[in-house]
Each structure stands twice: as C-alpha cells, then as structure tokens.
Image (cartoon, rainbow, N blue to C red; front, side, top):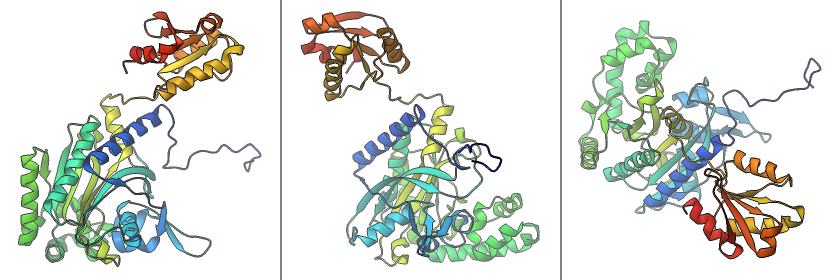
Length: 427
C-alpha cells in the first residue's frame, strides 16, 4: 500500500521503457538483421555481464569523460565491492578477451554483442537511461583495412534496415604525441576565453582539453570555431593511415565527410574515430559511434592489441525507421487452426504441430470458444490462412482452408494441407 493507504501503482523507472508486441517484433527483426550481418562478415557472438568492477570503466573510459564523471550507475554490493552497470560495451569485451585468453598476438579476433547499457542522463527521444546497443569489435589488426571493414559493416547494416541516406562523419585524433600537441594548442587558444566559459567547460580545459570539443556550452562553440584542425597535428604514420582509409571508402563509394571536431566521448580512442548520422534524428543525429583503440588492452594489463569497433543504438535506428514510415515485419501467425467441436481438439493440436514442423507459424484458440469467436480471433491476430477442422473434415480426412483477405475457401486432404497452406502463404 502507498503512504496514503491506496494500492501502489508500479511504473517503469524514469528513463526506461517496456517493449512488447508489436514493437518488440521490430526489435527482434533489427537484432536478426544484425546477426545476419555478423554471419556474413564472420563475427562471433560474445556475452558479458550486465555489471563490472567500477575500476574497469575508470581505467578504460577515462575519469574526465562525461560517462565516468556524470553518467555511471555505480554502487557498493553487499560484499563491499564497487560495481557499475555497464555504460558501454567495448571495455567488458576487452576484459573478457583478456581473462579467457581469447586473443594471441598475430591473430585477428572478430566479436559481436547485443547488450543493454546504463547511463544516468536526462531522458529524451533516442536517449534513455537504459538503452540498447548492437556492436562489433575487430581485435588484433592495426591496418586501415580493419577500420574500413568495421565502417563497411556498419553502413551495410543500416542499408539492410532500409536506411540508405546515412553519412559517415570521420576524423583521426592521432596518437599520444599528436594529442599532446593538440591539447597544448587548445590551452593556448582557450586562455583568452576562460572567463566566458561555464564552470564545466573550464574544468574540461584544465583536466583534459580535448573534452572541450564535445562541450554543450554555447560559449565553448566560439572557442572551438577558432581552433586549428587536429588533422594538422597528425604524425606521418597516422596521416598515412587516415589517407588510406579515405581511399578505401572512396573506392567503395561510401558516403562520408571529414569532421575534425569529432573526438568521441571515451578516452581510449586512437587514430580513427567516426559516427554514422541521419538528419532524421534532428539534434541527436548520431545513430552510432566507433573508432580505433590500439592501447586499451595494454592499459588494462593485457598484451598490446590494436583494435577497432563500433556500437550502434537500437532505439535510435527504430526512431529513424518510424520517421520514414517504414514497416518492419511484425511477428503475426501465418495460420490459425479453428476447431468446430471440443471432441476434435486433440486432432486440431496435431494440425498445429504439422504446420510448425514445416516452419509455418500458427495458433490455436486455447479457450475453446465458438467457431465464430475463433474466426474473429484469427482475424484479430492477423492470421492470413485459417485451417478449419469440423466433423465432416475429420471423417473424410480433410481440412477446409480459408484465405482471410480474399475469403476464398477450399477443402484439401490431410496429406497435402501443409503444402497447400505454404502455397497460399507464398512460402
């Protein structure tokens, strides 16, 4: 009971949502398309825990990142351990690869995941406190062709979903020497603006100047506009890597634009960083983000393992599909078995089993209602074909089939009824 004596009405926590049919059918379809893309590219599924030691994210994402400083769901468990609900998928995958010895230098490891992530932020369209991502990690290659493969996978996945108008926003943030020099350039340039920046932006300049590039302070935009491009600070090796990646994207005619202000929100990135954007998302135009993280495994105590990956938001992709008026497949039964008499119900269940054995989705009314009510139920759930079993059909070993859309009916023998249903369904 509530404090006022009335029964409590439980609701999903702020920033989360319940997903159920028909919406959940669209989720399953999207995840199925992702898994098929993984099969085509040779990425194997990995599943990591929903929570990890907090230190994993402090060391991987960086204490100055917004994810760590503001958004993590962290708590002490009953054993006094500092635990965090995972805010992103890459660090847990790298931790698992290290723990179980899945990577050996010289090998290339391709892994994929489907996971919830948790970030404490203001809920808005396409940005929830519990969100869901699909992602891939290519571990063990420093080649720009690995970056190209991950971007090609990502763009191809969105094309599978029907999102052909996406654009890749691409940048290189170089390596340690480049970033150190660029941090100095930001500091030199920002000195004259510090008084006009908000406290958060000033703290970013002092702790990690690169973080200023993803500041939401309008005054920071003025500072950023006057900055030189980070591309001017790239070491020769990073510049050659970036040029080769662009030539591969040009060859494959992938739509992209170079955006020197993209740095991504996690500190483990090196060299290539990218986002895939859709203008249909409005201000929150990014569908996904990824990049190269050559030092992450070594920083976590493992071997050096140059790697690249991407994480794609499920909710955001579905929002874009909805804005397009797209109608992903909905999981309605193809067939519905109608039983005219209670004495025939066992036989009706057998008909269902035969259809399902042929991979034809079907339902049977478990309430044993009237013939009319069963037909209404078949229509309600969207069945395309109804198989009617009555005394006459049972006696002569037949089934009456009805196409719900056209109303056409015909009686067929039990021996070929599954084939006839499949033909009517176009299978």
